[in-house]
Length: 395
Image (cartoon, rainbow, N blue to C red; front, top):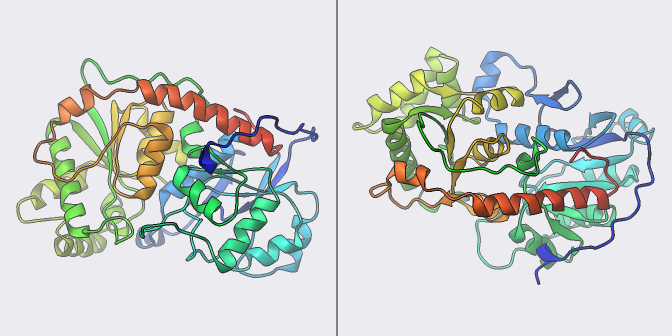
C-alpha cells in the first residue's frame, strides 16, 4: 500500500467554535467578497507583459470556496518584517499553503522557514504537488526537505494531489499524507456532479491552450506545439471554439488588441512554428476573434457555463469546467496533468499525432461513469482531511 492509500480512521475532535483567521503562504491574487479572487491591480501594459499563471488564481479561489473562515491574510516571506511577525502571532489560527507545484528541490521559499519558526501555528497544505522531469525516486533535500518536514510536524495530515506526490514525500521520510486531488475540482462544493457525454446539438467548445513549454513539460517542444496547434484547428473546424488563454504574454497581447504586442507575438509564433505558413491565416483568425481571458475567477465560471464542452491542455481550464457541471476531456502532456487525471479519473487523452483523431467520436463517446464515482470518493476524502486538520469548511 502506498502512502497515498493510507487512511486514518478517526479524525480528532474539532475544538474551536469561532471562525478562524488564516495566514496564506504564497497567495495568488487579491481576495474580495470574502472568498473570491482576482489578479492584482496592475496597468494594462503590465498585465500583458508579465507572465503569470491564471491556474494559481483558480486554485486559490477554489481553496477559499471550500473553507469557512473570518479572514485571510497573505504572508510576507521575501524578508522578515517585525510588524508582520507581531501581527501573525496576534490572533491568527493557522497557515495554509496554496496548492501548486511546490514540492521540489528548486523551490525557493525565501524567508518562509524563518517566518514559520517565529510563528508557531499549525501549517496546512491541501492539494500540493510534486513535479520532476527526471525518472526514478525523487527525494527532497536541504531547505526544501526542512520546509516540508516542518509542515508535516505542524499538521495532522498533508493533502496532496496524487500518488506520485505522496511517494515523493514518503521517500523523503514524510508519511502523514493523504491524496485529495486538486481544490479546483471542489470549487462548486458539489459532491454529485453526474456528468454525461453531450447529446443533441453540441456547438460551443472551450479549448484551453498551453503554448509555453520547456523540457519539464515535453521532451520535444516543437512537436508538442505542432500537435497542439493542429488539434486546436481540428476542433475549431467542427465547433464554435473559444480559445481560453492562461497567462502567456503573447496571447494576452491579442486579447487586449495591443498592436505592438501582437506584432511581436507574431514573430514569436513564427519562430516557434506555432504559426506555420499553412496555418497562420486560421490561427490569426482564432486569435483575433475567439480568445477568452479572465482576471477574476468568477468570470471563468460565468463563461464556462455558456459552453457545451471543455477540452485542452490546461488543468485549470478543464477541472473548474467539470466542477461547474460542464463535461470535458483533458490532454495529458506531463506528470502533473497525468497525476491529476489519474487522481480524479478525468477522461483524458495523450496525443502523439492528430492524424486519426475524430473529434466528434471523442466527445460523443466520452464515458464519465468512473469520474462520477471517483469524484464522490475524492470529495469525501477532501472533507475528511479538512476535518482531520481541524479546519472549518463548507464541503
